[in-house]
Image: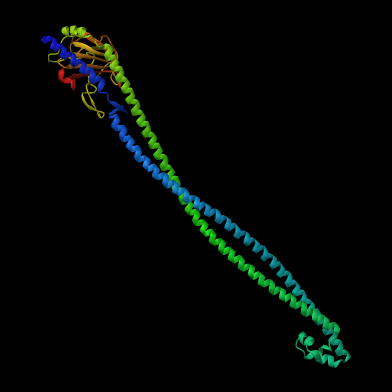
Length: 413
């Protein structure tokens, strides 16, 4: 009865070992174990913070685009106004050119009038000389006492003494001279008015150009800010995509682990022995009673990675580098409790229940020559070293668990 209780206790310990193997399934990200749920929550919070920043940037971008559109509309209207003033200036320039041409023609006419007047004067001198030579003293005295031709025309006492021809010619010359002078004055006033309007239009146009230049500078500032804001939004979106990818990777890894756990449970269920078979096997199986274990890899006594902290994780055994295919020997006697892929990171594995709560683990195997429920003795060949699972090279990972807690295997040799 006592031996049966011991066997039952050993069965429970073996079942506990297998349960821990299935339940304690870490999630790895870039080779580092993480707590998936907490990591996803943290990433989601980070995504929310980035989304808030992106929304703020988008609101700023919307405002900038509104300001840009307003300034663009103002610049377009200024273009229309400036072009209108330019057309007005062009029209005034044309008018000025026409007036200047008319002034030139008028000056020419006035010059011709002066020439005609001088000719008439010379003709009159000839007639005066003739009167003098013929002795018409009264006519000569009348002409000699006047100061200008207007006196000859306006003073009645002289009119009778001036020939009808000279009177008619002098009247025409006076009229032409007056008309030309009046027209020249009119043109001068028009030219002055046109020049004033042109100057006013040019000043107003220049003022609009100054305003337009200021608006263009503001538009350039808005474009710079818009470009920077769009870059920020693109960066936020890239960060969100990266976080989404990270979440997807974690979820994918969690699903893979879940499937692996399901497969491990299925294998464990398939490998379970009947109670009678198990009792019979355990009845003849060796039991660890303390003392040293045998070295499981006689071809190599080097340890490339000891028990303890490693790479932000905790290494739960020792790594013994050796050529792939090297024979692995049982470090202690017991019953093979598991054969297969214990975990995706451990690769092909063999677990041996040594009794008294101790289990030995052999990971990264290329193959094995034992089966679940098989009784082995210390020193029996059980497997062959390999490079399966999460392994950086051919080696044997050897671990020791006692009552669900890992211990440094080196303390048992």
